[in-house]
Image 1 (tube, rainbow, N blue to C red):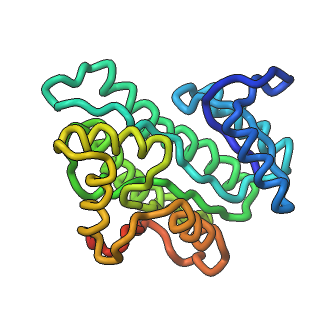
Image 2 (cartoon, rainbow, N blue to C red):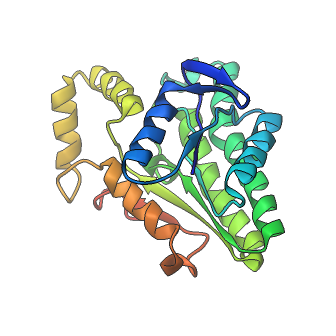
Length: 240
């Protein structure tokens, strides 16, 4: 498995500088008996994306599954105050990055002739609008369209393409959203989180494990006939 992200450099080798966050993930995978390697990549840069997949194929011989999880969701401000550069930055990472990685992965999968899985991590924001997140919401809606279009074209090669749409998870990015929206609504962070939980039919927040369970299923043989879908993981909060 290759783990890739941007972040704080921890060293340089033939593959470039890795990051602390990806190295931690690699160590966690190793502790569970898996084999993984960290390779940094800016998904906005086509040359870096091409290199990432070439190195992945050299390291493991083939590419079976791509999980597009790179994204920006921490830039929040009223729509009328969004500068064009910020808008473009979010589009470049969230949508163009997914396009570039999916395109390159699909080329390798088709050449190998073994099919494959492309799994796009979208958001509840792919189906509903949220204030002060115009670029993020637009890119996540766009990701649903890209998922459907790619599924139509790549199915003949045995490649499935699906999106996962979780509601809010308090990751590092989620913490920034909690702070921003609690202040925006005049609430403390605990009050904001309690109100969020109360509107979810399952009466609990989404977790990383909830999402990873669906990722594992979509990557499995059992999901070989599921493609073009945008599946909610929201405890019933999002129902379309």
